[in-house]
Image (tube, rainbow, N blue to C red; front, side, top):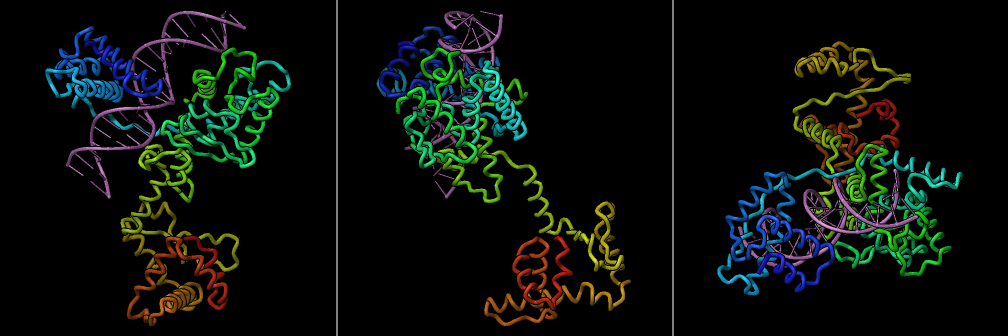
Length: 437
DNA sequence: TAAACCTAGCTTCCTAGCAT
DNA sequence: ATGCTAGGAAGCTAGGTTTA
């Protein structure tokens, strides 16, 4: 039996989607290209390893090799299971996979998206005013396609399979049917404010053209006489994205919008991974995580916070007294960041201590110490009152005050303290409010 | 003749279930 | 509980052919 015949037998025995059947045939063709019509019994493990070496040497990526070898392994398992391979029960494709390098998420910058959107909007105005065909026609339609991918992050195939009746305009939802999803799970995505006008427009145009409920909604062939296909296909969408890529100089594809959406959602303060996972219709959270590109700025800030928390860096309090009547004495000013960076830590501390010592006692009590100490004592007392535990003398145990200072320095719990200070004007919160942690 | 369409190969994504 | 793998399903790209 030849590999091609075996593959056809395998496909016939399964209920596969067209694209899956295709990849099995491609794998078998690749094998045949190398081995010719060699019977499957004669293709052994060593021969496959030699073939692997050749293909990888020719520049085939490791990931692609794994796809082919994995599909052929499946077909060979089928042969073993059905007794087509009598001389062995060991699959020659076993352990022929290689470890590919992991690549980063493919996102599109906001700037590029904005430029593409502006261009599409300009084309739409141009077509409306001149009634002439623009570079991307009909521009209103492709703008709607662009916005659907931007706002919902659905797959290209999901868009192509959308029917008129899948849009619930009253409920402002789009239904993505399970049979059209890679994951076979039905789900819905909301029609949000920015997307609604585009959905409305396409529904309106579809209504004018008497679309039936089961008709493909995003079918450019019915909205423009420049196309003659029956149903819109992947190529037509990709051709439009190629034009956007050429125009903006940034690679754009529907799937990259999916990655971008996931990354953007995870940049939000709430960072709701479950929400992101639901929107992308993943069943495994690890899949969602693999979409999200690391936010380097956030990473930098996190590492910085760690350094501060562990004492690797000293926190420098920067105070903006501009425009205030109650400026602190010049001696209280902290050294500039440039000075701090130049001096070793111990020197900075020494310098501050010397400056502070140079201020007279009255000034100190009025300007800072008194306010700070009172605030800390009050907050500490409040804390113990809330916890229903006896108050601790700060002179004996300064833990509370250190903790509160740390919290304040990190911007935590400040709101609570603010409220309390507002209720206790005697504390002099106004002296505090200008300070930023 | 440009744009649409088609085809094939390459690359990536996704999950259930098994092994550790 | 976690990681790994088999199996399945797309998505992306390039080059050739057809059509308006």
